[in-house]
Amino acid sequence: MSDPGREAMERDLRKAEFFESLTDDELAEFAEGAERVSFGVGEAMIREGREPECMFVVTYGRMQVCKKVPGGEKVIARIEVGEKPTVVGERGMLAKSGASATVRTRGRVEAIKVRRETFRRMIHDERPAAFKVSYRISRTIAERLTRLDEEVVEMIRDVERKGSPDVEAFRDRLTTEWTI
Amino acid sequence: MDGPRLDEIPLFKRLDPDERAELEELLEPFYFDAGEAIFEEDGPEGHFFVLTAGTVEVHKRVLPRRNQTLAEMSAPTVVGEMGLLTDPKAAASVVAMTSVEAYGIKREDFLRMLDENSIAACKVVYEIGKTLAERMARTDDSVAEILARIEERDKNLDLDVFQDSLMREWGL
Image (cartoon, rainbow over all chains, first blue to last red; front, side):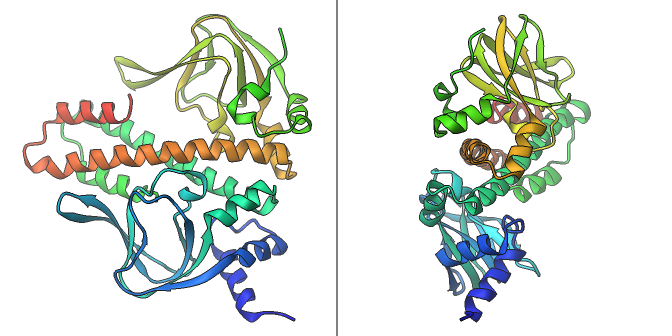
């Protein structure tokens, strides 16, 4: 018998970056180990420094990315989910290091939670679904690293060339490339 | 030259003997003289290489008069693995410091294996991804440092100091 909740979850996952290339069966496999979660305003979905536990495919809501500074937190980026879901916490699927920033909700947020433990078990069991997602995450990280390298090198050249580089624009581009 | 011991290289450690054999079928031997470029900055990255003997230097032209050394690496190791995940264009030059023995895998052959859901290729990419994810974590820390310095720019940002700090944070 079909499960409308599960089918809706698979449809949402299908629209998200990293899951697009999965077959229906592979999506179903991910959906089986995933769960719908919701957060109220001001809740921390991911905490800076904490060992990664999950990634979220966020289907609705607004969030902000914050870094600890002396005396509190500083907002470094804002995320608003549009038509396609937004993924946060994907780096934690591959890396053991603690999260580099806190993701805090700015209103009600709805998401699909994929546990790192589930993902790692799928990798251990050599499930193609998990390998496909890990490939997409790895490509995204590789592309971000390449762009960041280029940004920093270009900024260094800019300082040398002009002596008055556009530091503001540089800062904006760096924060756009932030990963959690 | 002896065949590569893939099991000695972290990238291939999780492969079982059959999976390693699948990759070994694609390996072509290469030999580079000291001073020869394995990759030229901005040039093509058509292969990734498993180095079995020798030492290489990685460098980048950051400023016109400054060819910055980024790293020195000795066999057994791999170079060019980033090209499997991004546009196959070398971000830096890799030059042999000694004579270097290596085995190369064509990027297109490897990507074909990946398309065919080869578990060997999937495992290699997963290991590359784990390394990149850890590097991304360190990079985020560097970005945070740079952003903190920019925030202090009103206190008379000294551009020479800023440029030096960018290079230091970025390992350039």
